[in-house]
Structure formats: C-alpha cells, structure tokens
View 1 (tube, helix red, strand yellow):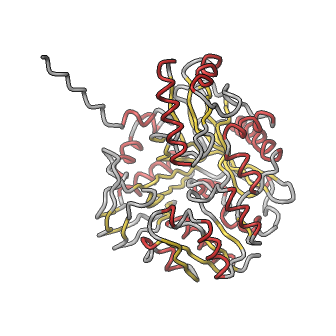
View 2 (cartoon, one colour):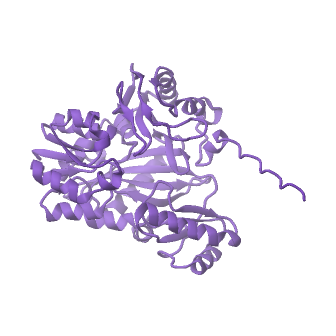
View 3 (cartoon, helix red, strand yellow):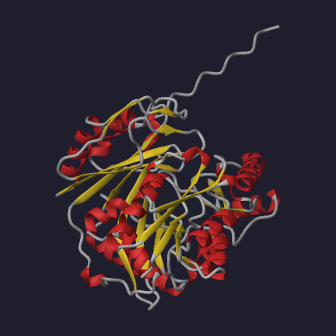
Length: 456
C-alpha cells in the first residue's frame, strides 16, 4: 500500500480523497493555487505545497509543478480526482517515468479513450453499439458535409478530445455546417488544445445513461450498474441518479455484460465510466468513455455500498478488486443534485464570500463539499460547490429526502442552483421518470424577442 498520496486537485473531490486515504492509513499531500491558500483540502491534508497563481493553467494544470511537489514531499502516488488533469495521458506517462504511481488507468487506455473517434472504433470492434458517424477526425468542412449526407441530418459535430459540451454543435441542414464546423473546431482547440472534430448521427431527445466499470491488473473487470444523467444543461449534468428509471433488470444485465466485455478488450484498469445514449425504443448507443472517477460516483457508492475511491487506491497499489460481479447487489435508489455557484435564472456565475452556511442531514442524506462559513468562492474554477445526495428504499423515498434536504440547505453570500433544482424535482414528468437530455429546456429563460429594424 502507498505511504503518501498527492492529490492533484482541489475542492470537494480533494477532501473526498483525503477521507479515503485517512481510512486506509495513508498520508496525504494537498497542492493548491494562491487562490486556495485557506481552502479545506489544504487544512486537512498532512502536507501542502503551493503550485502557482490562481489561473488553472499556472497551477492545477501545471504538470511540472505537480510532479515537483510529489518529489519534494516523497509522495509515491498521485490521485488526479476528476477534471483538470484526471484524463491526461501525459501526466500518467510522466508519473511512470518518475516512478510515481498514477491512480487511474494506463496512459495507453487514457489516450485511446480520450480520442472519441478512436474510442468509437475500438468500442464498435469490442461489440458495443455505436451511432453512425465519420470514421475519424474530419480535416475540412467539405469532408464533414459528405459525412453528414451519408449519415443523414441532423448530425452532431463533436471534438475528438475532452468533454463537458465544449466543441459540440448540432447541424440540421447543410447550410449550417460551415459555421458549426468552424465554431466547434475553435472551441475544441481553445478547451483541449486539439481542433479535431468528427460527425455522428444526432438523436432527438434521448436519455443519457452511463455504466460504472472497474478493472484490476489481474484482468478482472466488473460493472457497478448504471446512472441516469439526462438532466443537463448544455451537456453539463445537473441531477444524476442510480439506478436509471428507464432500465429493467434484464436490460441492466445485458448492457452490463457488454460494457465489461468492452472494458476487458482494451485492458481497462481502475475506475471508469462508459456513457450511452438511450433512444425511445430502448436501444443503446455508445457515446464516450471517461477514464476517471466521475463527479456523480457517490450515487453508485450509496446503492452498492462500495467505496470507489478506496478501491481506486488499492487497485493502483497492485491489489485485486475486493469484490466480484457476483458479490454486487443494488439497494434502493440514490439521487444527486450538483449545487453550483450561479444565478438559477440566468446561470451567470456567482462568486463571493459565504456569509452563512447550514448543510442538511438526517436519514439518507450525504453532502460532499468544501464549503464553510467565510469561505471564498472564486471565479477561477468550476462553479460546482457541493453535491447533495439522498438515498432511499426506492425512488419515491429518495426524491422526498432530496426535496427535504434542498429545503433545509442555507447558503448565503452567493446565489446557487438550488431553487432551480427544487423546481425540477417538483415537475410531474421528473417525478414519473419521463426524462431526456432535452428535459431542461422547459426551465430555460425564453429567448428575447429580436428588435425590428427601424424603417427608413
């Protein structure tokens, strides 16, 4: 087992990893930017190292600074959390070269699955259903037009790297292709450093369902069930739950077996997520794989009883998975609301100082956060400041507990997404589990009417 783990991240996920390490008797090293000097992950780690100014590119994305911090403190492993460098094959390769263990998949798997076009080909070969799409990146608008004509409109232009909705544009007619192709390429290059995009068939109003997988170095691979992630805005998830209201036990077994087979084909190790679109006829299509711990991993932990972060650390240290597929069972239902520091009406960021804070508790409630009274929510990083989770015997009880938890949450000094999430939970279609990736459109502000040009 490792003696000391450096956490290459911040906020609630850094605290989550610290908790797991403490239970395993492992010392921790926090890295932080100048903006996070007084953050909780710095306070609760055994050691801490400042790695640069507030801008992420100069701190949390600075591989040399992170590796130097590991070497100076004698850390023998690095956990990247999610976001920032969590899916960086380069960081994983540098860790190997420096004899520091990377807590995640191998660099080869990260590189393969991080290129969405290559991942599509690999998953299709492994037996997973995929949407019709171009075979690799497209170097010109003309190639994109030909691919779209063969596939049939509407199509989706997608960046081959990264995620989070950046570098993605829906194209419904040939006349839209030029502007959409150029915009998606520019966004992809700005966000991920790679302008490459590809085209795939666009499904109208599908569900977004993902499967949690885990593999060890002995070749054992298991799945821990699925999560429903359809409630999202601009491809950013807002509410997640496990299991999905749309899946039968038979469908779960079928898809789980296919996912395990595909992960085994690429020699997947550690935690990962295979994401799918589910159409109205119940057909699955592979979308992408995330080679890291997911933000929403907590709902899977609640329904399976498995500590995914501790399992990550054990497997990275060379241990076999502590459970087999037959050991797993799913108990009840769990739901998560991501609390973002933003205006619930306009979605504008809302940084500031927390003047008052009261977090919910009681039966079935879990809160993962790095907030505290007098904490400063800076404008430099992702707006998510907490994750509120509720677990119940069934979906109805989980929803009731979540509604109670949101009502009893007090965050003053900034605006949060909680009022919006209250409205979503009260929606009759949400209550009934009638979900799709277009669900949130009913809660978005109506477009402003265009002003008529003045007559001459």
